[in-house]
Image 1 (cartoon, rainbow, N blue to C red):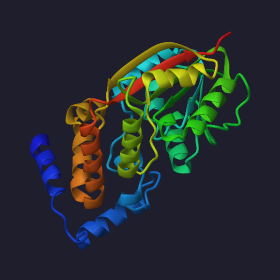
Image 2: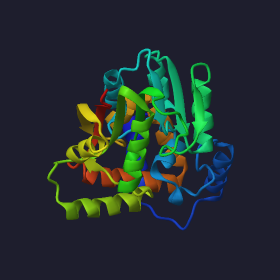
Image 3: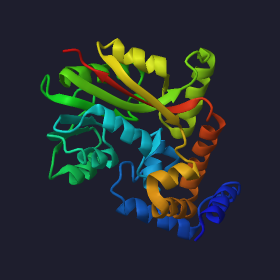
Length: 296
C-alpha cells in the first residue's frame, strides 16, 4: 500500500456524499466502537470531540506542535530526578517520553476514566494515576517539582484556564516549573474579531470550544499567576499533514490511520473537515510551548 495513492483516495472519497454507511461499513464501525476502550468510543463520529476522533482512527500524537515540540518542552522542563505531575495525560503518549528522563516520581491527573486506565497501564511500574479534574487535583500543596500539561488549557474558557494554572501553581514547590504545550495564534496583534470568528469555526469543526491564545497571551496567563516564563518555542500546527504524521506516528502508524479512515466514512468526513480548516489557517495557527518557574 502506497501512502500518496491512499491519501488521494481518502481525499476523493470524502467528496462523495451518500445517504448513509453501507451495511458492512456500519457493522464494522459499531463493532470497532464496542471493542475500543478509548474515551468516547461509543459516541457517533459526528459528535465526538476531534482529538478523541483522531485517537479512534489510530492517531497517538495529538499535540499541535507535534512530537518534536513536546520533546523540546520535556528537555527544558528539568524532569530528571524530579517529582512530576502531568495534567490530563490522555492516552499516555507524552508519559512514555517523560519516563525516559527518569523522574523521581510520576502522578497523572486524568478526569476521563478510560484515559486514566490507559495511561495507568503505561506508568504502573513508575508512577500512579489520580482520577480528578485538572483544576482540582486533590494533591497536597508544594507536591511537585514539575507540572506538565499539553493541549488541554486550549479547550478551556478564560476562567477555566485560570483555575487550572492556579492549581498548577499551588501544587508546585517554590522553584518548580510549569511546562505547557498548547495551540497558539500568530501574530501577537491578531485582530480580535478574526480570533473570535476562528474560535467559532474551530468549535464547529472539532466539537470542542477551543480558545487558542497568542504567545503574548499565553505568557500573560502564566505571569498573572505569579510565574516567570523562562522559555518559549513554537512549531507549525501540522497535526494532519502527511510529513508531520510520518514524523510523529511512523510509517506503520500513518498507514493505520489512513486504513481506519478509509473504512469509516463518518470519521473520515470529520477528519478531512478538520484538516481543511487547519490548512486554511496554517499561517495563523501554531503549536506553542512554554516553561515558567514558580519563584522561590
